[in-house]
Image 1 (cartoon, one colour):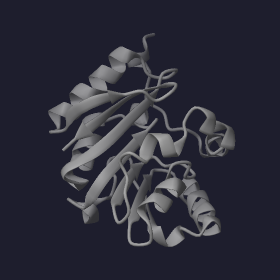
Image 2: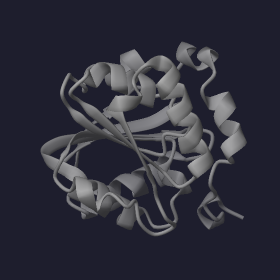
Image 3: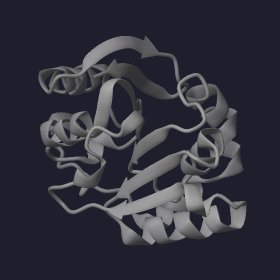
Length: 189
């Protein structure tokens, strides 16, 4: 069976504890990955934040007037993210949205996001075109979307197909990025 034939799956909520490990900074340092794109007062859309590995640093980068809209299909992940954000003192900067199987439920954010992040999540979504259409709708004109997919789960051919789908929805590929252990690109609305 090829990887294309494998049904997408959702990362189990309990695996989120491994994904927030401080050891991860050795190869996925949030500052190195996100700081070039995120500034104070921005509204950032994060798809599939899990327990907030990138969300908490994003909340620091956007400052007191910025917001990070974290969208996940698993309420258990969002609950843990909120607890971690409260402990870190950035809960007021984070908005959590529980998505459904066919909607990100982000209609209230149409045209409001300055930047979006989809890190290791697109391969888990059965309808990538619908995903990218909803992200496109939430982005301001000229806003950027960083897409990164884990090399162990996604082949270069599958990643190219993902980028083709994104382009079909109106996003353009600005450039490929070099993020350790990931296939990644920066897209623009």
